[in-house]
Structures are given as C-alpha cells and as structure tokens.
Length: 417
Image (tube, rainbow, N blue to C red):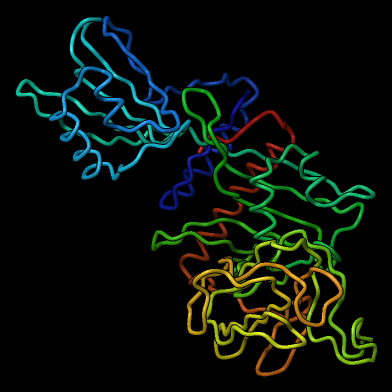
C-alpha cells in the first residue's frame, strides 16, 4: 500500500502545507515503509517459553510451574500490582513470556502482555530482586478514507459495511451523527457519505481501529460534517466546518438504529386508550431488554411508575432541558433520584410497561417546561472553539480535506499520522 505522510503539528501549519504538497506530488512513487514496533525482540541464544493464560490459571501456579519459588511469586505479584496495576490475569487474553539465558537456566526475565499497546518486563538482578518496567508499544497509526452511498432498501449500517467501514467505526459514527439526524427519517437512496478514521498497526499488522477523524453525511436537512480536533488545552472535540461544536448536549435518537414507530404529534389517536390526544414524544421500536442510554449528561429527577408511562426516568440536563424515558422493563442498577449520569450511560432497559402495545422506548424532550419535537428542536452545542483555536482548526481542516481528496483518488493509499 502506498502512503502519503502528513504530520499534523499545530505550531507549524505553513510548513505542513508545503510538505503535504511535496509529498502528494511524489506519492505515486513512494514505497511502503514497514515500521517495526517495540514488541519484537532481537534474535539471540536465549530460551523463551510463551504461556497463554487459560481459564482457572493463577499467576502463582504459572510462576511455580516455571521453577520460580514462593518468595519470587510474592515479589513479582507485588511489583505487578504496584508498578503495572495488574492484579489478575485474563483467560485467553493475557500471555506471559519466560526468558532464560539457556534451556536449563533459571528464569531471568518475564514479559507480560496485558494489551496490544502495553508490555510489562520483570527482570531479576544479580541480588535476586525483581524489577518491573512498563513500556508503551509504539503505534503505527494511519488515517484511511471510505466513501459510500445509500441504495434502495439500505440502512446506513448496510451501506457502511459495503463501503468497507468496520462495525466499530460505524457505531462511533452513529453516536456522532445521532446528535444531528434521525437515521429512520433522514436516510434515503442516493445519499452519499464518507468517513475518515484511524487504523493502528504494530509490526506491520493491523491491531485495531482508532478514532473517527472526520465524517460527512448528506442528510435531508442539509449536509452534516464533523471533524475531530485537539484544542490548545490538550482535549479533543468534534466541530463543524466553521469550528462550532458539533456535539450537542442531547441526542435526538438515544438508541442507535432504532426504528421510529410513532412521531411527535399534537393530535394522535392513542393505540391503547382509543381517543385522540397529543403524543408528546417519539417512540422507538426495540426489543425488550435493550439498554437505554441517557441522551445527555444530567441529574435524575424522577424514577417511578405510573399507568401511562409505566416505569420511567426523567433527567434534568440544565436550566432549560429535561428528557423522559418511558415503558422501561426495569431500571439500571444505581440509577436513582439524585443520581448524576453521563451522556450515553445506561439508565434502564426497553420494555412495555404502562399504556403500551409492545416493547419500545417513548422519548420526550422538554424545553423550558414545554414538550418539543426531539427530531426538530435546535439543540445547544456543548462547547465551541475560542478565537485562537478556531483559526488553527480552519487551517487543520483544510489540510485534512486535501489529504482526503488525495485518498479519494487513490483508495489504496493512507495517511501516516
């Protein structure tokens, strides 16, 4: 795979633009550079034994089986807890590498790999003491670009899979776009979208996906674009093309990819009661037991039961907005009146309690004491960029867009970050 190398550095954007232009002009003749991570050891005469932790294994048993004594076991366990924050081993996930100077020698080094990006080395010195050293494994992070189109009968998820976007990235995109659009009403054949995201490699092999860097979707109410940007204070956020906060304080659709079965209406015939009255929220079809996430951060002000809503939770988000979630099968553990919840935190589970004809989530947004349509109400952004950060963001966005243009022309390329 060929690559265009872009090093993003907010302190030297002018130089980056010139470098980007030079790289893009030569990219057709660039060769793939294989980067070598820190997890590869140089060949030597050492004897190595790799043990993958199995169900029921304990650290003590694994160490004793390699000839270590009980004093070594206690010292190693204490070092792992103190210096590496490792207290337990995970079956089928963690592995230990025992190193000896020769086949018959004692263990002189133990390597623990608790994750693809972390490595812990325990070495025994001449006095018999064990020392613990935690190392981060170098990531080879690449930005890739995928473009797709909604076809007849498609959902966004199916179209995204066809475009080659990984499932985990699609879920992240859902979470981002749910602040601006309704995947039930806003998805139509012919709409186009693109996603730029990170892929993390080690020793030339892909390990996992990283963050969504940018996303665009041709929604019915206008093209939605979001870009990930690091602010001067070191924190990250998502912003629109002009540097305004793209993450809203509330989500229009709390449950991703749920089908709307009943819209907000001032005049609807109730399916259970049989007479006409206002439907003050939106109903989302979902299976019983589906987790219900909080649409925004706030404080639980009601957790109760009534005939109409069944089991319901009400959250106050600020001085203007409240949300209500009804017909729950049960409440999430630890969610009580007065509980502070984060955006996306599970507060309950879909059910059909109260006046309901089947399992679904009834979702309401109340603004200044008045029920509003969750699909159309203007929602406030959590934060916008300051003047200096906004200027840097605009320059960064232009560089990113230039990279995406090149990637679109050459789908097999990637940007080295």
